[in-house]
Length: 161
Image (cartoon, rainbow, N blue to C red; front, side, top):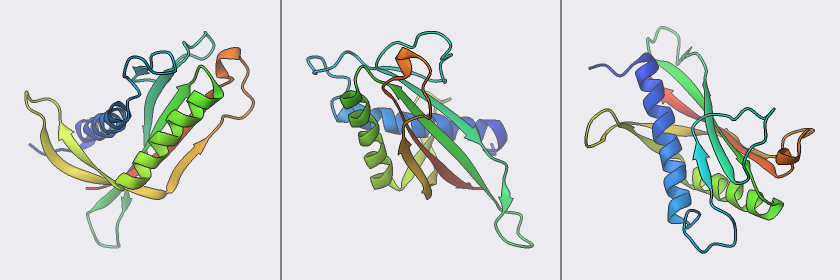
């Protein structure tokens, strides 16, 4: 089966998201007895017109269209931008968690992509970090109290098809 289009994009998004969440788990972010309240992970950006629960990590993405790698080649480079938005209970917790994501992504450089449609996920290919896109920041002009400790880590991964 050829891994193209939406299926391939879905596998990339799931695999990169899982790698980041797994790194947070290894770092103890989901352990009981920590100095902060529990962290919850959601797989879409929340409706911020309503209150967002503190310590919510939202994972979302955007896929760009492919660009030819070189003239005359049928290969294309696709970039998938990943967004990790964290609505922390405090500035310290928000900066710490987003900083851990940033460091993990920077150190990884590339991510294995798995097919999660099968009982035992299989490694299918790798995507690489586009280092120029790695960023951590605060949003401009937060409007609501739940946005006070909102921090973002975003980056793109490169997929050659």
